[in-house]
Image (tube, rainbow over all chains, first blue to last red; front, side, top):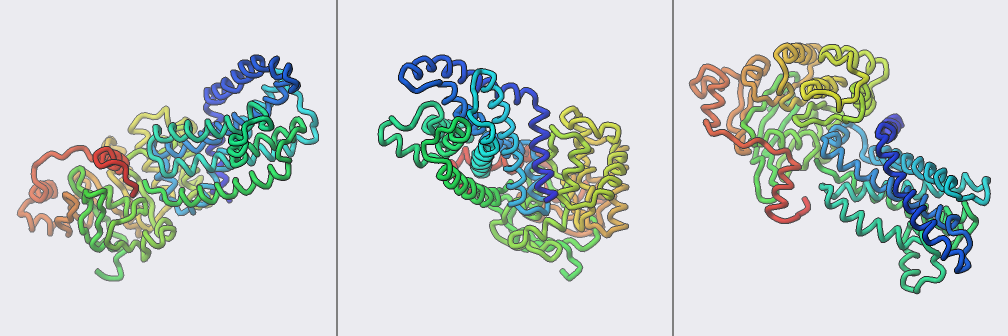
Length: 248
Length: 269
């Protein structure tokens, strides 16, 4: 337990010491709120969808968790480049614990980031419908964070250079995000796109968050929890396996 | 070879995509001795150490370290050794003290011992006053010193030192060597050392092995090496055995892999 704790603590210390990272990562959500929220808002309302900021905020919160979590995975690559990975890998500690500590640390950072964006969204006009659902919303944030931190770590386990990681991010994370229903409702989309979003784990994260924050779920909260929970468990296991195969 | 051997390596070979970095190397290190593993740049020293320390899988051959095989029981092997790497391996965003603490927790050292040894070691390497500074503010020499202090924090059965004193001033080197020799005597710690400072190896090592182009050329005591080559110093023996050519700087394994990937295309190990 102590080992997992110190690995977790390390991720948090690194996060809070890098002020630029905290402030910089708020830029993107803010841009999305301004550009999409205020830009498409009137059209969305005219089309009868209601307040677009209400609809968009859970999507933007998900986005910031998705990006922070996945990029926590990239830290394995930094550790490799700066040699610190070796220090961890020769220690008499099981790979599973290392993977767990890192993932929990990265996921905690991502959830903190998500909460900051939630505050930001409230500042720009978002109003959660029910405060009592907040703990459940937090649960979905944790599930999204864990899934994608583990995914990032898993990918970084078999990719050795930063460029390769960037390519994966662009071809995996961007499609996951755009086809998750974060920016627009899934109901009225073409059938093919709906099917794709149904196999997209992030769609269940967005849905769970929207269900808890504004009481508007497409798949249903129970489905969201079951699907996302099993995917999180699966990605953790796959990540632990891939991480255990790392050679320096 | 006998039961006193804490490290026993038989026909160890590592091939990186057609390039043989370590070629049928066999040697043994007895418990409690200081063993110097020498060779020019790129000879296969670090690759050998990486295989001994579970970071790389051998292509073929056998290693027994403290009674365990790094391939089949990596966890038991990891409990047996400590290592000071040749390349930097600190977390630069953490402070010196935090780096020590992290290491101590990973190796399961109880807090009181951890605190006491951290103070003792950081004072030896003259970083005690800087323990609350982030490592990224340190100079190269300070990082090196911290790295050594960290490697000595848990007292392992075997200590690998991969060019530990590179770039350090004579005072610090002498202090560090006194500590290591003390550890060697009081706790019977086996020291496995690589270095380019021949006088250092000559002064501390009981037995010496020389590797070149991935092959082990010779192993024995200093006197045996001198007699065999008809020279009167380790440096003389070393040059007599490995020739006078200057070698390229040794790339680390990752760089080796990258270079080879560029040359031979991507291929998973």
